[in-house]
Picture 1: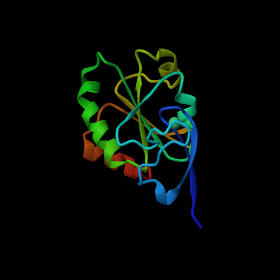
Picture 2: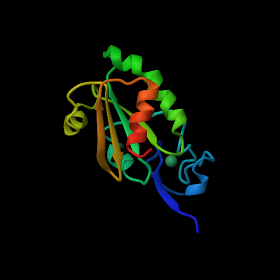
Picture 3: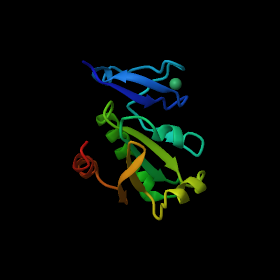
Picture 4: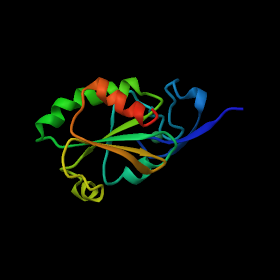
Length: 144
Ligand SMILES: [Zn+2]
């Protein structure tokens, strides 16, 4: 008995079926051959957000903007978290400046904002940057 998870490809949005025990083996997309679970954050935007919300791994979204100092300072932490969470949680970055409609839809009032989605629904939100240990602790509290 092995569980299979549906996971969207960050590059082409294609849904991949990946056996749970293969999550840590750098699985490749069946359609475009990109890494389905990269160790670095991928880009979210108006065009791919709905597709990327699907799937059975949690999705952590960093809402940021290039002019925002605290966002810039937080970026390396978010990348480190992506490496630590590879195969367990997907991490995406949403540029609020180039995706104002989506940011408004998500009711983002300050940046950086962290929004955790599970099964396509928001389950937790954190406004403001966190140091890596606190970020990991916050995610552990959400069951990650
Ligand atoms: Zn793909």
